[in-house]
Every structure is written in structure tokens, then in C-alpha cells.
Length: 110
Image (cartoon, rainbow, N blue to C red; front, side, top):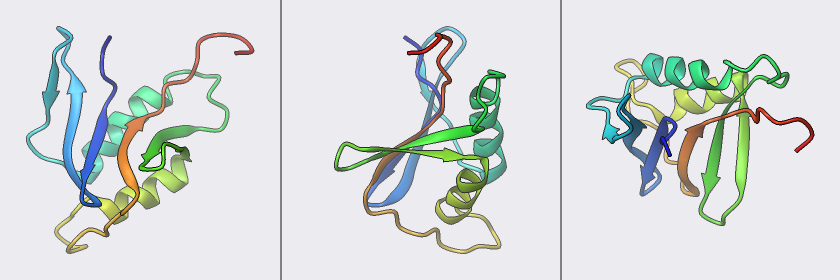
């Protein structure tokens, strides 16, 4: 099964960005840029017109819980964890294991 765009965290900071190639192989992006992450996650998450809440990402926490992020909270999260020239060092997210693009269910009620 393909791997949806995923940011992997190590010691509370973004360590790598993984994705599936068109041939189905898991690959790592060479660089992690705020705009590119946002575009990639949105392209997947907002492709389904039934995504009324406009969820963009899901955070997977070290305690096993999941925290969905809508467009606004996703933008805020990315701005704090992805380094940019202007922002300096990114914030540490101690309990985040990974963040992956939200994939809306194609099914009906469940």
C-alpha cells in the first residue's frame, strides 16, 4: 500500500519527510520546505469534496492518540516545526511521533 506524505519526528523535531513514488516505493524528500509540505498535504487531504471540516493532517502522538488538524491548525503547526530562514530554529514537539496527510474515507457512514 502506498505511504501518504509523512513527516517523521525524532527528539521532538522533524527528522525526515517520507512519501511513496509513483511506482510505489517509499522515498525520502531531500529537503523539508514549509510551502512544499503544505502543498503536498493539502493536495491529498482536500482532494475529496466531502472533507467538510477541511482536515489536512493527522498528528500521531507518543501515547498512541491521533490529533487531526484542519487547514488553520495545520498551517500553525507547520510554521512552528518546519525551519525557515526567517523563523530560526523550529519548536520542539516532544510528544509528536509523525504527522501525515489526512485521507478522507470514500465510504458512506463508516
